[in-house]
Amino acid sequence: MDTARADAAVIGLGHVGLPTALGLAEIGWRVVGVDSAPERVAMVADGQAPFYEPGLQDLLTAHHRSGRFLVTDSLADAVARAEVLFVCVSTPQLPDGAADLSAVEHVARTIAATLNGDKLVVDKSTTPVRTAERIKGVLSRYRNGAHAVEVAVNPEFLQEGHAVHDVLHPDRIVLGVESDRARALLTDLYRPLLDRLPNPGECAVCDRRGVTTDRSDRVITTNLETAELIKHAANSFLATKISFINMVADLCEVTGADITQVARGIGLDPRIGPQFLGAGLGFGGSCLPKDVRAFIRIAEDHRVDFALLREVAAINERRADRLMEKVRSALWILKDKTCAVLGVSFKPGTDDVREAVSLRVVTRLLAEGAAVRVYDPVAMPAFQAAVPPSPPVTYCASPYEAAAGAHALLLLTEWDEFRTLAWDRLRAAMAVPVIIDGRNLLDPAAARAEGFDYFSFGRP
Image (cartoon, helix red, strand yellow):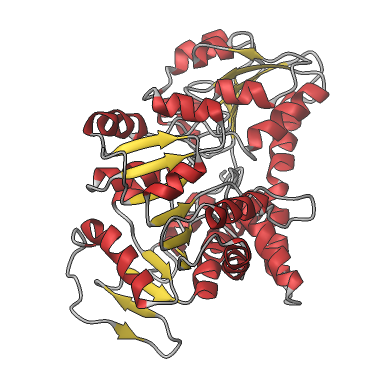
């Protein structure tokens, strides 16, 4: 890589920034990545991915070799190298539900103070509507010299566990811009991805709401505020689907209906679709819970009633309660019982345990006096760091080791390897053959035929 210049800088090398940076390198651009955490920069500079994401390590290895990706711990250095600056820093939740934007503000101030030419600052972090206006204000107030600085909004739609695929095969690209220059810069950067899309449109088509779409309707070019709202609205809608199907699952459970067939029956309607209709323990991770709460807070700040989303969040919070009810129903008293927990990441394909239901479940099991034995293929180090050391949790090398002496097995993450467990070996390891399937992963009839007492959500 030419260390003097880069085509783009990516600020923040977390679950959004690092896949984004490496994806841009993969499609041919020179990229400099920067992060404020020295240990993360050191790992990436050493060619080691700092978190698990399928395909990420391969991309990192490839672009250390290609020379198209460079990492630094100096934000000023990254700003000096590139004209387009993607801001991918964390926006964690404050106690009142609002987003903590201090990292965004710090980045904007640093960019303003270290300008060496015209720049386009692209907010890719998930931020409340009108954050871009705030960024513009900071850049104007602290700007060094007369260089032109524009702000754009380019929300990410990456799913953990599929982030590399999502970067390289986007289902849509949203560009919130205020000038033809900003649109051209971003469109040029994404051109290699756009050229892969089927049936590219020759002309832009504008609808009556002022949203412009082109390239076979995959690119949406709009104003800053609309782009900011699209991200929160998308995640909140997905969360609504999950809470809806979980609400219906509770009704299925008391009426003898099968939530799997209900979900299939409504998901075949093209207006609804089958995605995000899996009943069970609900949603977790760093995006959906936080974004729902943030969207509620944004609405409150603007005096708009989001009662629907408040109930979406409440239904999701109650899923751990429903699981614990099933555990108590199966075991009665938890004190001095052993529970095996399979899967602690918030979803398969990641080692992320942020807002994972496993944290709440394991904490409650321990509080009621149960011993807990855990197995997860990749997330146990992160889980161990997140759980208080006392009382201790036993971390195991396999599902069968976790099941040794257990009075119940709790399946909390739907890793593929759990679909093909050796039933006889599992049953032989357990003190009592009880399975509580929090993700409706297994076939109830098959589990019961193997001699297990089997419990799931919304299925007879």
